[in-house]
Amino acid sequence: MAGPLPPGLHPDTLAVRAAVERSPFGENSEALYLTSGYVQPDAESSARRFAGEEDGYTYGRTSNPTVTSLEQRLAAMEGTEAAMATASGMAAVMLMCFSLLRAGDHVIYSQSMFGSTMKLIGSEFARFGVESTAVPQTDVDAWRAAVRPSTKLLFAETPTNPLTEVCDIAALADIAHKAGALLCVDNCFATPVLQRPVTLGADIVMHSGTKFLDGQGRVMAGALCAPEAMVREKFLPVQKNAGMVLSPFNAWVVLKGLETLKIRLQAQSAATLALAQWLEQHPAVARVHYPGLPSHPQHTLAMRQMSGVGGAVLSFDVKADSPQQARARAFHVLDELQVMSLCTNLGDTKTLLAHPASTSHGKLTEAQRQAAGIGQGLIRMAVGLEHADDIKADLLRGLDTLNTIS
Image (cartoon, rainbow, N blue to C red; front, side):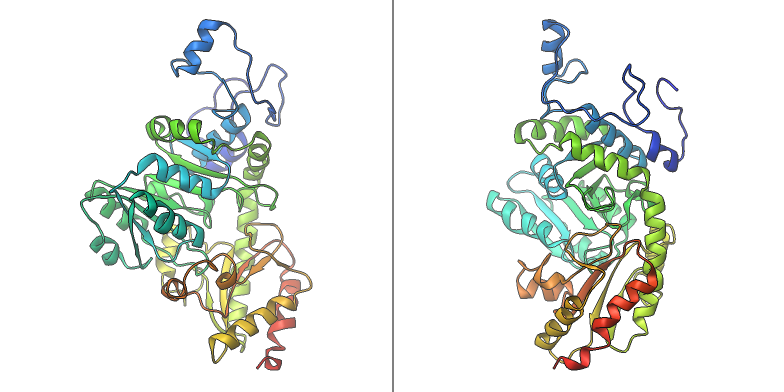
């Protein structure tokens, strides 16, 4: 095969075929280009490329063929015109905010988002005059009421980390566009396999490629999927100057991870649903948070937005009489693990468990954690590919001995 791909291919095919054209060597697996600079054909071409008047690679901080392959593949899967890869998911959020916001602008974001995202927007950018309002994730009226004349961005994460709350993407897109603002959706948990936010009206899709896109916990990566003009005119100039660039090796790893994303997520999601149903019946569990369960408050919406699948992350609260006891009991469950990993990452082939109140959301104030519904007894579980019976047995080591914790 030579030349560009034909139009109309399915996302499954794009996940293994979208990339830059092969080199003259005819490699079947996308090449890993480890270089910081590029030899130019002549001085005039060099001048035009550095001026942005001609396509071509100039310097590793600006672009790289391996990184371009990842960007093309992820954009094709998300259904956007273009994508910009970054060094991490948080680098993607930083790049977006630096590119689109200035002093006096206003951002509305979910109070249930990833802790570092909330700190970055609510605290760090506040130092530069960017105002923000945190609202309940699922309350569309609260999002609408928070809009100001200076609102430039609505930022949602769906499902959220760690409570798997789901927002109505189409409704938020309508609110944003009526206000002349943009909607960005963090699609880390669902991935383009389950959910394509731009088809529901989102303008930007943000990813932490560190998670499911890589899929084996090997590298850090991030991305913004957006219209071509936004990527070229807004994101690229900031990336050139700020250096939020993804390394070619990490891009190559995530590029290969995308090829198996669908089959991994399908298997992991099926296992997660079965485990969520099982955990709901355990007497030591107070509540299970998982969009695939009918008991989830946004179950119907989630099934409509996420292709009828709940994803591969759940959270559950252990029963306790006080926050202190809840923390001790959650720690007991985690400390009794012999197979699964106590690890704050997610999206791995290995099942990972974490205590959000002391890790991913540990830097938030207690009031912020309470507003987000993150208690001391909450355990997040990102389900991998181990046998379900072994996962259950590992959880029971702690759950069945909680009566020893006062």
